[in-house]
View 1 (cartoon, rainbow, N blue to C red):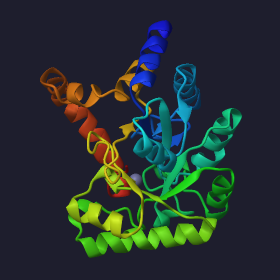
View 2: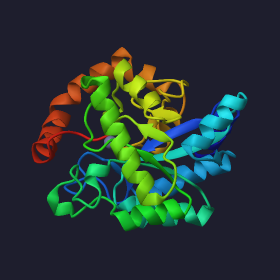
View 3: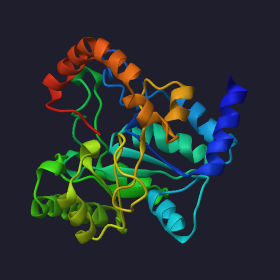
Length: 278
Ligand SMILES: [Zn+2]
């Protein structure tokens, strides 16, 4: 199996570049992280190992977009983390530093230093504070904006989208003393107003996920990786095949059959925190 996965990863490397969407790395499942937003450190290392052995070159989102615009590129991988969770500093940074790899971290500025709203209180999880954000920026991670209040931008007009984008951008630029050039749509959701606002706010790229978007600079697609993904599913998610498969009828039937269980689990979490992340 390991050899087959390595071969498939090499084929993927020859064919395309990939942007991965994570939230955090750490213990997951159970009462700590029922939404599986985190990937276990050993699993994260295995995923990195697979991509490194296949020859992927790790870059930030901005670099990937620049190099893709210059030529038809393949073999680039951009790791992204949404929301600004504390483990991005305490777990992700040291693991990536071992290999000298960069990442792009999308921070929702209204959450900085606060308890993590997507984890149950007993998990004791929080979001990165200002010092931690400055340190990861100084270490070479790219900092991207992810709004102030994490709203669903597909429901807002252009003016409100622009305000969320500009405010979060300015706060992060001041904090890190650097340019913030990339933006992630909260919940990966957006409409024409949000896309227009992202251009107007001065970003050079904006990213989405969950089957939305493509290669347009303001609708860049990402593969959403969760704590439930084994290595084969991880690899499948990086291909073009995952979303069509996921939406094909046998799998939809299977998902429909297991929905009551998943819904009740999700409802428990969402009652505590209001709404889901991304
Ligand atoms: Zn988010």
